[in-house]
Length: 475
Image (cartoon, rainbow, N blue to C red; front, side, top):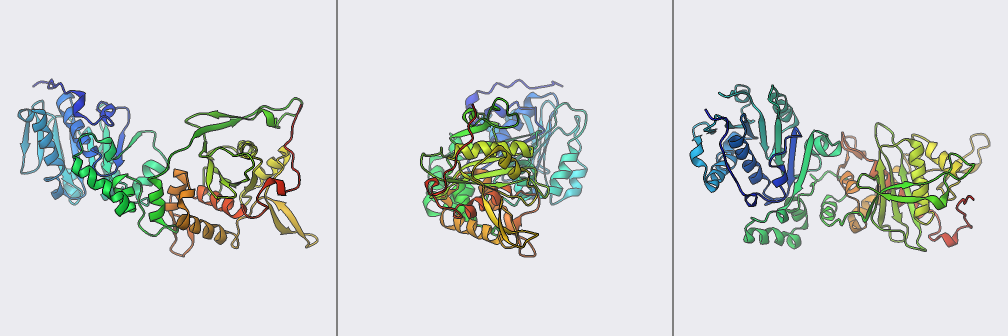
């Protein structure tokens, strides 16, 4: 029996967006998600037919939540592409149990998760299972995914699972599994109808029509933005619509600096530079404007969070102009905050101290001239006193959330950062009624934004109305 079947296909038969994935074998998971009409399912079927024809060993399990749906979807799609490529004679298609067998012995079987016992008994005449395609992966449970994942084992060099789906809900396990904490073994690609040159023009116009008639539907089902089930504290429809409008940062990178002579551990203000890098933790959406006043809200890593986060707002308009988010040591976070504050016209820095006071103390040591001051009580004298940093309490936390509820409802256009909006969509009310991030999600961006929104009104608006402040300069 021949080990493979020679087939030559022009690149033009594939959607250009997906073509680089045709021979991709370096990742265990290919996660293809996005909006309707993007061609992701068609490409998945094309790719698997190509693998069945060209690889010496390729046995495929195609899975959907319900077995009966295969006949008019994935199985029919395989048959259609065979005919288009003129290779139907190279396959035997068995209608009774939905099996496709290539002349070289490779095979594809189509099963549903509504009969899990039958999945356990699947065997292949030639070798072992090498590939799994989960179509409409958003319809299966994480437990089902895990069972499929452990089935993909054996001696074959390349084992791969492809998942195709529309991201209907930001609360779905797929979001936390492959997006919130990216898996290095997964290659993720988003696509929309705009990426599909083969799309019927009438269908394209239908999708476009939802832009005005139903913006939420357009954002989720046409542009492939993560939707919300409705329990989010914030206005899910307005936020999801905003996700489809985001222009992206104008710069991304990190701040660098030099130490002044004779003062190790300090920062010479005139040496601060922004070094652009696609891996940078700082995203700039609006450059600072001369004469404008800004506020930075900071949330330090705590309660299991891996990230330190800062949010920069224009104090006059409330627009989100910059974010800093990532895993970093506290001293580095404080120094990035120092540089970020100076970059934005000596912005007011309001950094949370609930879990650590180190960043605030480090900013004071570095000589940053403008930190948020909260009123407290001297533990010895009982007299009021001012202290640096923001403390989130049972009194202040509801105010932070209430401010963001208003922002999301009335002014979502002021939000520019994708990760922030996605966190807001996963910020829900718990069984006890407490607003918080859903299980497994982060709330760092939300809390930092809430602090910035709260603090922006706590001092006079423009620097000129404050006592004279000087940035440390070193010779």
